[in-house]
Image (tube, rainbow, N blue to C red; front, side, top):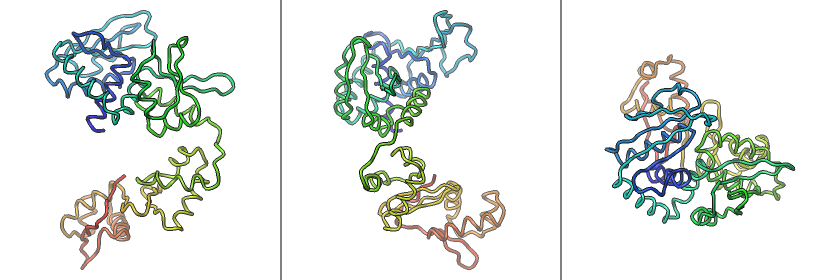
Length: 337
């Protein structure tokens, strides 16, 4: 993940659950230690000399001492805490001024919107299931938030704000599709799990004729499995395979087999997909090598090494001359999965 993406996500987390009114400290509160670590590690890069403190609140004595590498950790008993929660804090007025300038700059750039929303959802988002199969993505807010509305409008995600529920409500299959496609749900592990469970319970859309075939190619700019495509289109893997085979016969896509899994990609992408073990073999072939040399380097037997080399030869990445294997450099991207 690029630094600007990490910072944008942290801006969303902070705006959702941080105390953005104070002028003396930067704080972030959450009950998920992974989010606390993510926020801390990102801000640590911005403020390497900052003296961070971690506060741990739990109903009983917290067992996992010093859950992140912070010098100052304080533990408190909170009888109301159903599960432990954490506060990461940096007390420094100059740091607050710098951080707020970063937040202002990040929120003005529309390229950062989806990352900010990912942070917002991880901090204040939830999934609501009601009667008659109603499903809603919600982002809790005490009052209307101009920034959230700007982001949702920019991403073309339809929404409404309920003053009674104190939350933004997002429903409808197309909006769920956008949340899924933009991966806005996957930062908080528990929310990710619930989002995917509910998302997969949607009944199949009745796509128009050739809809999937016409819309699958834009997805295949990077190698992807039929299982991933089946989830995306909410169709069976067998149906997706039939469409992929049609496109393959039309020479529009190609497939690569890596560790018993097929990866599909557009033919014009100029990509060759290999396993990480084959990538190690290619790196070792910085000079001609015998099969036995490669077997020893990879700690595998001669037969297994020879099989991998034959597979690389079939892909046009190596050749054998006088019992010595040589690497061939092609004008293609070699992607290891």
